Image (cartoon, rainbow, N blue to C red; front, side, top):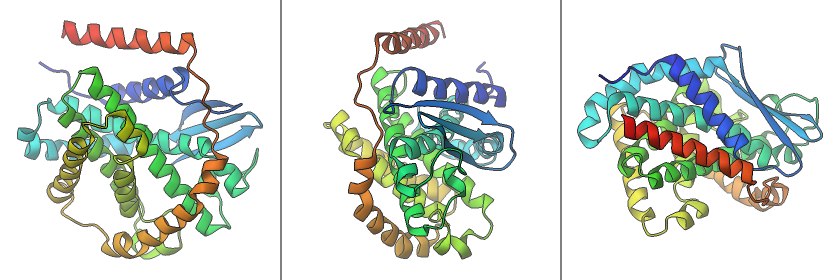
Length: 312
């Protein structure tokens, strides 16, 4: 009988996935080192900040991880029971994958603030407050948050494509997990902000549901993703779109804030597009190739996972 997915397993996955991203050179930052940790804080939040001229820190609150796990029991498991005939994966594996997507997106979002040069863009320097607490520049803040959502979702989608190409899971199951996880993390943020429907016009972050729509739309259509698997992308995108609509209807009851998505979101996207070239010039992504040690770590992890699948 398959082992039930527990919070301890989830926490282990979170730490392992973040370690892979940083230790295996999946994304490199020019002239800087990134440190990460899970912060003992019950608030549903995360942050990134420069802690030295050549150093950044990413903190993921324990509160957001607990919220993800609770949401998986309250919403994801009931959705699986309604939708399992469309999937070829067990409930435990589906829940585990979806939880992984939610936690990984939080990490990729914070990492994107660093690699996209948002601290320089917003004029935030060492020892100042983390990005999530800034801003006198409201418009620029919304641009930076939208940019982090888009690049975070895009980089995470590339990781999902890697999983698909490894053959360890059916493409449709991975795409459903990615889509459901991405939509869910923003619903968690929305549920935590009781006044968001009233205050989102003047908040540092766009409305969570608009952010979900943007992250999904740009994530599955990023140029890197299309180049990665050009022949299969139209099918993958069509599957992901259907999963997004099905989850919205079956699990969330079509409760999208129409004003936020149809009226305010185009304004935020337009401003982001007008600032994108500037953000591109500030990017701190390094084009340095992965070292032998980094590639070796990835290969060892791949072999261990392959052996685990064979034995099971």
